[in-house]
Length: 443
Image (cartoon, one colour):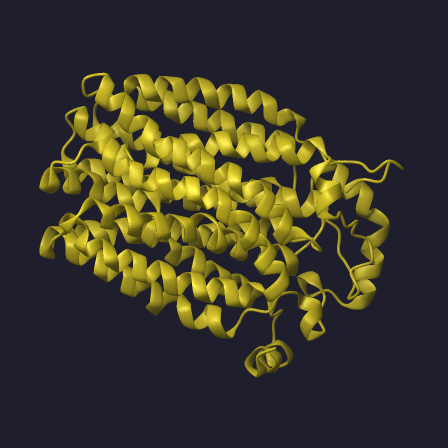
């Protein structure tokens, strides 16, 4: 354990978990160097300068998502085995290098694919799983709001990185914009991730949520009731035995809840990727000015910021299944609006609602996995489920571009199909209920 962590955890006048949250949040903020909204700024610029098709450009992000499917299980294992601090720090170094390498992509299509693949793997697997896992281990009773704040940080990056990319591209060109974004990763997140992350509160003599031992014991009796109703997780003592039921990876694999959450999340991330990467180009194809179309990306990110706080609090009041179903329905509504948006006002309404829904697919799954299966094997469990997210993002990254190509320059068919798929997924997510062991004990 780094001496700075031990010193701060004992001397700070507040719970050290909030430092963990801030540090994980900085990594989530910085991972947007390889985010789909950031890439969306560059898609029309790269297409115009190189003559490459939208589908070919989007294919780089799609391939990264496909390869991230295989990277997620070892990422989860590494987080449990070596700790989130090492995984986050190394991932930030790599994503910074891959982002800056995109400045030379016009030299050859292989540079676009190589750098984007590496960036999307870091974005989808170790940075996402590592940040959410460590926060899920430091918070139990307050897990919903803590996870909401974590992804509020992510939404800040969703707004900041596209804004910086747009401004630098306009002033100095899109090639230099990639270099600026890569340097931002190091300035914002590398030092905190390298110095301040501890795997669990118990490692520094603390309890989740900053509880005193007596408080942790008092909450044990209400564990099953809380988990069954509002989806809120119980508190846990230093040895991990007080109140919180722990599932092994093998046990979790045999539950319906795990696969409903994993597959449903994969479908929703397909819609997220297929929309975010092509959002600006969609609006531009409807006759909306490029600058106004790119501004919709900021509106999308603002909606994600609002939704991150909203869904975190909703999870402390409603069961996961109802919350996640509501998220999918909001996404369906936003996608339906995108099919008819031809002026800035409805376009911004659709983008804002879509951002709120995206916040839900970011916030709900990490809370659900931690609440349902406990903290002990959380990294490995996330490693099993995250490939569905990566696969969905990979399919979405190329599907909209293919529809645009084969329909003569229109995205309408893609977004109509997306709205229908979101509605079907909403109904399926009603099955995402807390699992039970053979003896009737709720996880």
